[in-house]
Image 1 (cartoon, chains in turn orange, blue):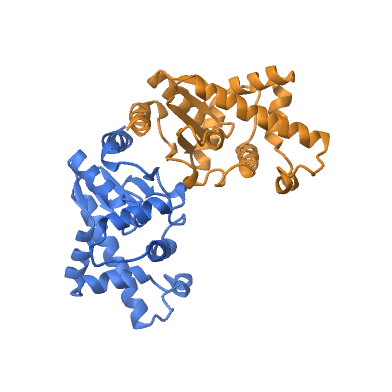
Image 2 (spheres, chains in turn purple, green):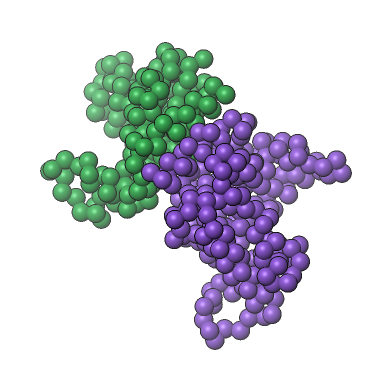
Length: 204
Length: 204
């Protein structure tokens, strides 16, 4: 069985950096935007559109009927469900290919049978705003207040999109094997120990 | 400044084992019951009594008035406050002595200025019941249901005793630097990586 690490993260916490560096350190494949690209290719839709639909999620009312064959879905809802199914398939296929790190896309909730090591990366708001600011392009002149609002909005969408598929809420530590607080931390320095922990967990 | 690791934990999650093994691995002092012993010595009370009062905590209504010099406290409440103050002092003194691991007693909420590395150890209920069962003495013939109830009661008391002193609720990942899920895990095997992570965080 492949060694699979999933990284879920709060926006601005440096979760993508954690995932990328872990993959480099361990010599694992790294998947992030690749999943959207693959879904877009398979469904003949644009990556942007796929991302947008997946981020909005399936309306909550649908959840209650999910799986009941007699329910009626609007075409929009049906498309969201199709994309969710495509996303799950792509994640399963990638995970079966070999050792890898998958960032985002609720991979932890998809790979329940693959014995994946699931990390959640988080940080305090001050650190997240600072991190967003540091990586923002020149034309993004958001104030701290605006950045904070953006962070909250993105995280709330992430939480919502996990709502219908998981046993635990997004960010609830019980849904992960390790929760890493990156506040005021140099991620690079922590990678060797983090990689050792993940590898031990996966192979121990 | 000393290197200080605090370990908070759900009952039955193996947090004490994590703390003890981390201290051994890093060559740090280890404090757990020692804190109660010290408070008992200083206050001339029995260790059992001290533990009991500290576990019950200070009545919530007191919290609202905490620090107002004109408030009236019952002798019982006053004693609880005195013991809490003694506990904080003992923890501060121990932390100042040198590198150490402190398990429980809300040390993470006391050592806010000491740059301590704060770990929270948790596990799913099944693992906690199994761990309790494995270490239970022969005369403890609790059923799984009873054990589960005991675990919940102890954790709820731990949560309550932190309520008045901390910014975050007990177990809220934002109050810790690393949250470790020990479900189905061999703690012993994870210690070298965990110790490396803690040391890097403290000295990096």
